[in-house]
Length: 172
Image (tube, rainbow, N blue to C red; front, side, top):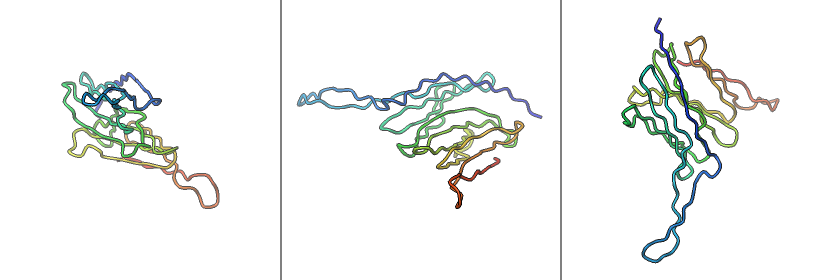
């Protein structure tokens, strides 16, 4: 059995208030004020795999969250933007999934008012997004016995009650 030690060290800077910071400046031709939006850093951290690491940044720009992942030489490996202003970055974690046979990056995102989604990335693949699950309700995950990624979601409402149904997905 393959043993892999993964250390996760994350420095968290978060700012959900004031998602866009507006700076006033003047247009040099007519001296009228011009608003410029600046990017706000929501997250900066390192994900360690043995002695190697990835750098993860998430910035909010024009209301959208953009996650970028770089190698330890600052080469961008992935750039991924939220697909809606209502979808915001929440967490990032590096995990070894034995049933998959490799390390994946698991991210969680909000979806609208109370929904959520999980996106799983494999940076070694040409199309690094290998799994995406979303729900209008809560979504959570755990690794069962270090082997598979288990996603637990609340789905649509039952017909006769107002309680959402539970869904479980085992990946891969």
